[in-house]
Image (cartoon, rainbow, N blue to C red; front, side):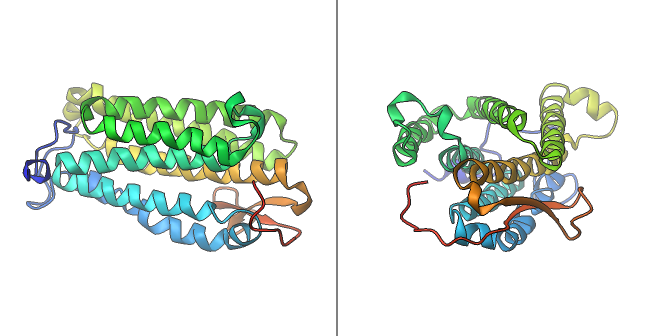
Length: 269
């Protein structure tokens, strides 16, 4: 019963050489690159404090789940254990689930949801629970299946960007899509063309994937948080800003509100 916890029990092994840098960490750079998942979410929780208070406290669930992704991924790459692999992949699945439940615009809801976000969330959570169970039986296909989940997220983002009148929001959306494509390119190259990158003495594309996919993921969450207020609570006047300087658009984006209108926390959003 303890075999799935043993180092090297996962069938997945990335291009980086095992124990080549540290005798106690299987993939050192792939492990270290997850630090961004642990350092940035607390900053985002602070920046989104007004959003969480006046709009939707669920935004902080996204940042917390991203931290779980980072911790799970670091554990997986440090040990290459089967349990680590499953934790890594399933936390990613639940981040997607939470994002769709919180931010998918109502006009895209299936008919069964009847324009009700709570009903839609139930519609999403049930198959996610089923996928979580099935993933434990076929872990080898999880990674490729999870890659496809980014496609509908990017598609919905493109649809929303076509509706926006804010040049700042549109530019951030373009950067988000570009970084996502760069992340996917790194993941595929590391997985499919490892020998080529070993010959180039750079087997660290999966570490770059961690950095790029984190940037793309939290940026997408910021954009959908903005779209959600703009669509459902326009009276609160959402504003896309950057930290530490608002005039530097390569900083950390976040959403604040011009009008702090206290709302009933029981309102179905």
